[in-house]
Image (cartoon, rainbow, N blue to C red; front, side, top):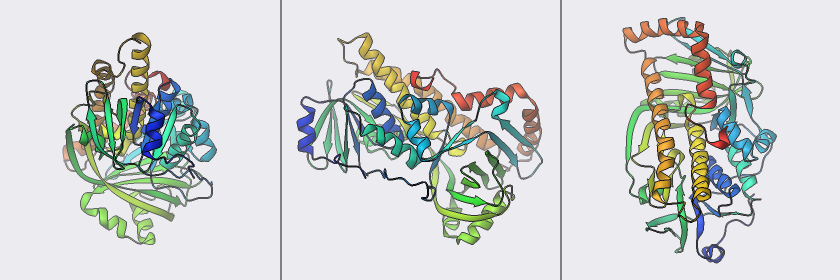
Length: 419
């Protein structure tokens, strides 16, 4: 349990004495990373989180529903902040290979870490594990104050400050507010920042299953008429699943009995790992691409899902968010060091962060949409194209090596924490 961090506004106001450097709204994986990284650079940080995270841990507890496939860049960020040890001491699993194939042909492609002389292609980690490891570090940091249970109801942006109005009636002042409160960001709404969005008319059904055969430390992805199905390798014969279906099948997938669900998964995966012998808790959510029309306002910046969401089939969402956090840390730190006499939260500085991250996020969004379009089994010409492209890609070592490098390490100039 988190102790002594849910504090009244009066105490927070007394500690603030003239304002915080940064107030971060949202203490999930991305918000907590930004808070810890900024505090490490001597920014005074207040982190507001509505719900208390569960820091209790037992390796006997069931696998969580939501997981992330962390890239090497994300791993480097978490190592640099002293968080990775807390993740490894709880639970994570490295995967060494990826195998992609489709249901209507023999076309397939295989990626292996050994081909690019890497120990793995990433780690599958439960989101709750990442958040718990981050908060474990945050609790010990002298420049971070954690506040749980408060809700932000208004936001006032002036030429000099940002003011956060709380539901309890208090107002907190800071040089910068960071919105890290997810896809339905209240911060973004209060700032009047609009979204460009696209509804894929798909859903993702997620959970953890145990299979008859070993996953061989491989992530398996099969494309079929309804959408892709993926096994993400976890401990022993356990895998996290990501099953993409038309939106009108979401309730059907959630309503199946465990036995019927196991049979449906076995069929969707073409029994690649044998029979599914046990299923855990499952969840589902609609897939919508979102992109904020701007990431910044005076003394305000958006990071992570508050700024953008992508199709999750390549697992890039949290990795993009962690790169956002690391880029913001670099941007603010550099501005304060280079021109200490100037306001490091001024718009021109925040604009550097936006330019750094927006292009990369757009590229990933569009790439995922292009990949999804190519593998839709709705046109003979696309089916023929895939049957020719996949075997060629599987044999073209330079292309495969480049793709693995891009996914593993990132496409743009990496922030210092990610290097």
